[in-house]
Image (spheres, rainbow, N blue to C red):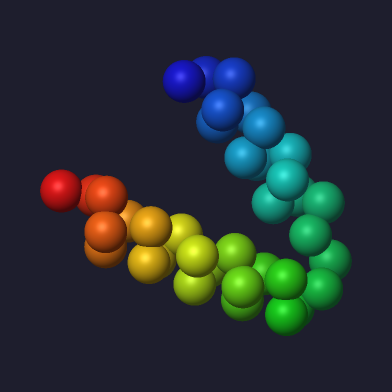
Length: 37
């Protein structure tokens, strides 16, 4: 789990494009809606 967390943080830190950040935020929101419960 910690490895995934570190990888996710590294990926987020490398994002420079606003569009990419918006895409990622949407993906995470939809993923959590489907699999969060």
